[in-house]
Image: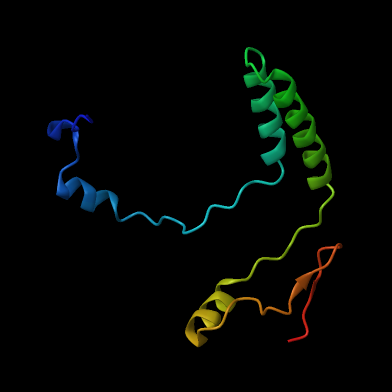
Amino acid sequence: MTSRPDPSTLPSPEEILLRSGGDIPAFLPPKPASLFAERALRLRERSASHAMRDYLLLMAVVSEAQHARAQRLPAIALPGHEQIAAARASGQPLLSADCRVTCCGAASCTR
């Protein structure tokens, strides 16, 4: 049986309305500069007293290798507000199905 939350601790409808005015992004991309390094650190910390210590340490090594590789990746240009608005207005995707990002990071489109 689950317990119900205490109604006195829940925000009132007015408080919810006041908080809803903030601009919340639809997508928060990960930070590639630290994503894999943070994951490796977390795996090493959790492996200390874990039954699957060796596996977690292996995954930490994999994450460290991913971090090293991610540091060498070129920056990818994301679509601007104008491109997003144009795609939304026309009902088309931001990138067509025949767009590919090559190994050097440059988008090669046949569109």
